[in-house]
Length: 342
Ligand code: KG4
Ligand code: ZN
Image (tube, rainbow, N blue to C red; front, side, top):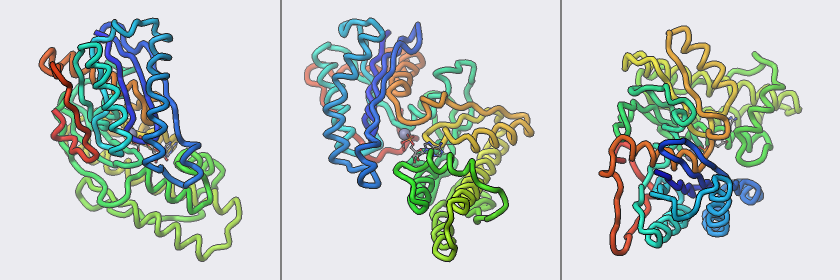
């Protein structure tokens, strides 16, 4: 079966075609980052309007790349939530209109399910159960994954998400939006040991996180320090070390707690080289394995949505194919607990 994936939950329009037999046929992405950069963050109304312009051309582009006829698509998977309501509505409307026209079923996908399954896209040897560390701009969660649609939330951030902390700290250092990648590039020029930031909740004994205090520590330091380019790089490095230390500590604790030996890392912050390196080293000491999506699939994309749809078809069969028959009613969920995604 060929599944068309549509992702429009935030500031990236992601479209993909995934074949349940042959794998990923095509995926393309349009990032709105430059447009939002001017405002220092995502402007929801601009995001929705831009998705409207991008979705159909990207679908056409995917059909051309994969050399697939529109009528060959068997199902459409779209991100139903969580995310920006207006942006989600664009993807949901186009997905349902197209499914109605083609008389094919719809799959309503949870954005985080897409992220946490994405490492399996290129590495089918990963087996359930595993622990997933979801680290994006909006979420920081540790989840026990027993199977498709069997997700248990072990812990999450009580305030800022890890990506949000990267972005806010990057802003304090005068870097653009989103700042995670630029901050990590700056950190490469930093000297270790110049600054040390606190590790909030590192030893709280649960699987929750807190990052807003860390950002405040950076803010306080900047206020009281004469800032040079080198000091900026040293701060970026110390900040990245603190975040890495917290994420690694909690992830390994979750593995031990559940008696599991596979950790899957997903979401934009999963592109962070320091996190990838440290997690791999520390997990190996425990005899555990860490799996990351390809760098291109770490941030939002359509491939993970098409793939999550295909995984549902493979594991749940026709049961998961909601054919809305006459009129394809649809809704989006700006907020949506992953444990209830079935
Ligand atoms: O998963 P994602 O693309 O979108 C959300 O669903 O949020 O994640 C975006 C987040 C942003 O906060 C961005 O700054 C962060 O991922 N990010 C990084 C890196 N690349 C992206 N953070 C740290 N290091 C990176 N290399
Ligand atoms: Zn995301």
